[in-house]
Length: 267
Image (cartoon, rainbow, N blue to C red; front, side, top):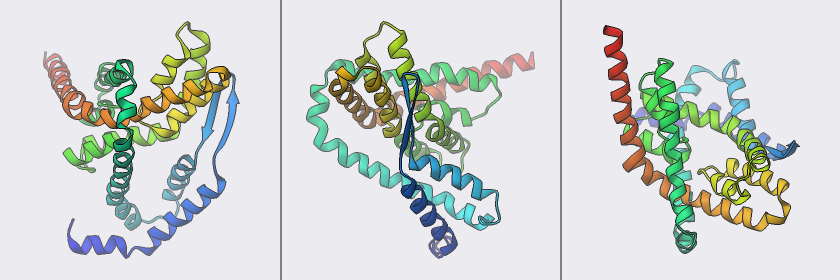
């Protein structure tokens, strides 16, 4: 990005005014939660902000200039979130060590996004966007990784952002419902679902643990402790799992699967 473009972004007062107004409105609305069966659905300010932003995009309020200027600012926002994550991780290292091997190994469960979603994405005809979409659950650290390696405007960048936005809009609702349903319908211990709720997203973890607490109020303290430790581990170790295991594995499987698909199409 050249210097002229950078100054143009910071001088785009229309964009900054709209963002400030959206933030003020969504924070004023606050958080709402309601129960659906054993699940708890949380409506968070980030959800309102995404919906308002999408609506404004299709109105004369947002012009092409604002939409283009907003794109590089995503990198800045993710950088701030990653810095906050780093500050949280350091003082909590003793708690991570004391959590035990079960919590340490739970991060490997996120590899299921590759094994389950990547074949489906390729079958649907999605190109390299599938790498960004399926290498992880696409939360902030993973978005930062893809942006650093491929760039936000790359196919992989578009893929990870699509899943990030979809997860922000629907992830908390899904986690809040599925945790309560499965915990009450299966013989697995509620604490196993508390551990599984920590996938690196505060909103999803809160929604899932909230539904578990509603279903098992006598285990409230344990559920919150396990969910919090699991989420912290996902934030701290998940990025390294993505760098050294998930992303290379996704790249390799993508080449193998698309190679076979192309070979069959030629035949």
